[in-house]
Amino acid sequence: MAIPLLQHHDMLHGSLFSLWILFPHNAGAQLNVNFYQNTACRNLEAVIQTTMKAKFKQAPTSAAGTLRLFFHDCMVNGCDASVLLASTPGNQAERDAPINLSLAGDAFDAVTQAKTALEKICPGVVSCADILAIATRDLVSMVGGPTYPVLKGRRDSRVSRASDATRQLPTANFTVNQLNALFGSKGFSQHEMVTLSGCHTIGFVHCGEFLNRIYNFSPTLQTDPTMNPGFAQQLRLSCPDVNLDPNVVVFLDQTTPKLFDNTYYKNTVKGEGILTTDQELFTDLQTRPQVEQYALSNSLFVNDYISVITKMGNLGVLTGTQGEIRRALDCASVN
Image 1 (cartoon, rainbow, N blue to C red):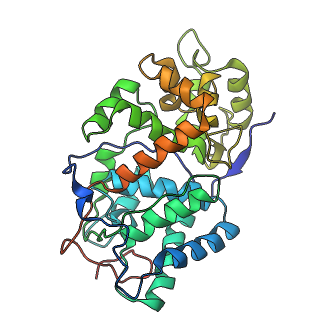
Image 2: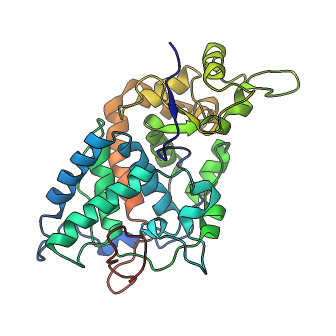
């Protein structure tokens, strides 16, 4: 079967991993599912869901893009919407760090659409950080992902530095030991790291992120021996090593690319993980048993995902009088 091939349109879903800086592990203690219950924004979830349905209809790739945007926000200094801030003459923001230039334009727009709708009903009440968390849940559910309660009460950061993203976001070539070190430094277990890796079941990646696995892998091997040879040949058809269009991307999950499910793990068992970080989860004996379990049980993966995505959404949040409730409809500037 031919590899699905797409042209880049600011919708890539590359490596989701990042260096976790040390936040208090109880950072989400002040968040509450009913945080907005006694405000004019008590129906914010219905408003956001309606907006996301329209966005998804217009751009189905918004699901993968928004999930990635959420990860990149939370992984760099916490879930504080700092990734949404635009650069200013005196500061280069996170979104303009080289590693973030492929963040989905449709994901930023999804937040803008939801913020615009809410500001018409209850101006200055709902944070951009909460909108991103809820929008991610809703959009992923539209491609088969689970729904779950989202804790609320996050506030928005006034600070965003590209240098933070550059330091805290790794390449796609991390080994299991490197991933364990990163996630472990923030209090995530190896089990949780493997679960979060399953977010690669939706989305896209530039050919350049894995060319080293399918061309001139070593002086004696053309391709990475952990990759299925037939799969490597298919990828070479989509990603030639001569005159490669740098904008070409491929699905991270070649089997069910538009469905949030456990096929990502099935693929790695078959040697069809595209990124080094993907295939390493099966190659490394530390994580192989969990990959095999998830490959056999979609419900096991989804149940674990709900727990871990909730935990991640509480990382380093600003609450109370910290930060601000950003007023800009595109969430791109401070008050």
